[in-house]
Image (cartoon, rainbow, N blue to C red; front, side, top):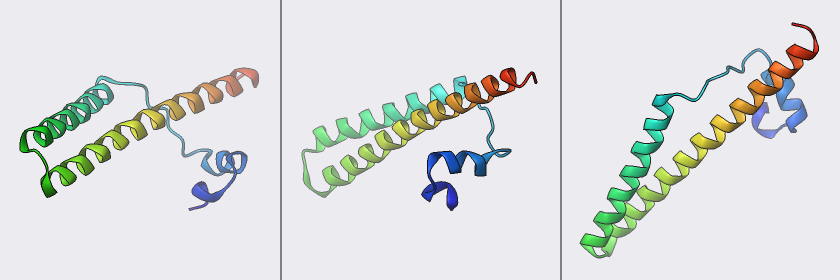
Length: 95
């Protein structure tokens, strides 16, 4: 839980040894592509059905998919930055 409430400098120390480099893969790309496709399909369904509770539900699902895709991209970027930082540290330390 400390990772969520600590300052960034303190958080890094707590995560040391638990961070894993995860390179961008085809699976990452396909997952995001699928999420965007599902979101588009939901929005099309909303347009066809023309309103009501189904529209609100589909819009909420589309928004959730968009948020999940954005979170996945942000996490991937953060992991890449952490990996680059670690590589720099190891290079500076000669190891």
